[in-house]
Image (tube, rainbow, N blue to C red; front, side, top):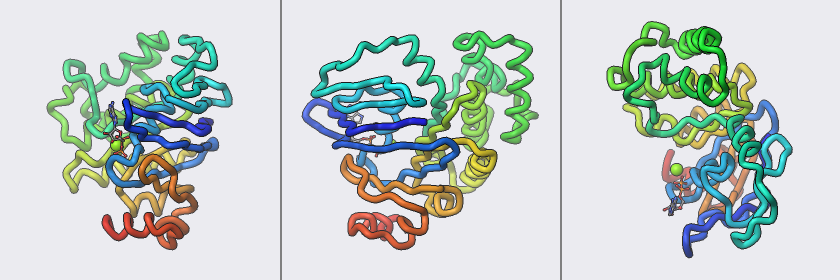
Length: 250
Ligand code: ADP
Ligand code: MG
């Protein structure tokens, strides 16, 4: 569904992705772990073109969407096509990023209405179904500031799903939450995983990763240091750097 080939990304002299090869299959749930600054967010942002890569290739649904060598474009990118493919990648951020001046239901319906030109009655029905799925039917007319962090994050998940993405990407979705609110967001994500959604999740919730992930990837200093099943990576890590990281957070 998405593929990175030898992807490098630098900010000035700072090379933060140093040759990433990654392929995600349909229906896979992949959890990405690694220390702060190891390049996890940058990798997600390169996948959905929030960042341009410096070197390598990006594929979305089998289509080459970016190919560069030492910052030089090697292909003509049709921006309309790339935008459409990127819309297949839903993204949920650490800090929810809801529109503060829109109600819950407006937050969910605005992008499908404007970007995808979905009929208003149709998307409102979809939004209500999604709010039911995330357990917030009674909050549809509230403003984000009146919701808890866990509720805001569940709205953010519903909002991303309203675009009917092929893949959902989560960048530390529970890191900004008070501990007692983490569980409700993880439960929503677990439900999505059970429904067969393809998911890429950057998380420090090792228990969740163990239970839900098909594959765990450990990133360190801009490379994929180790990957495998949760048992392999989390319980029997081979690499010294993985062991040190897990010892620090567990
Ligand atoms: P992680 O998500 O694993 O914590 P990031 O991908 O956010 O790591 O960051 C990796 C490195 O890239 C860090 O050193 C960070 O400072 C740097 N970085 C990320 N985004 C930018 C940016 N827009 N400009 C400059 N440096 C950046
Ligand atoms: Mg990050």
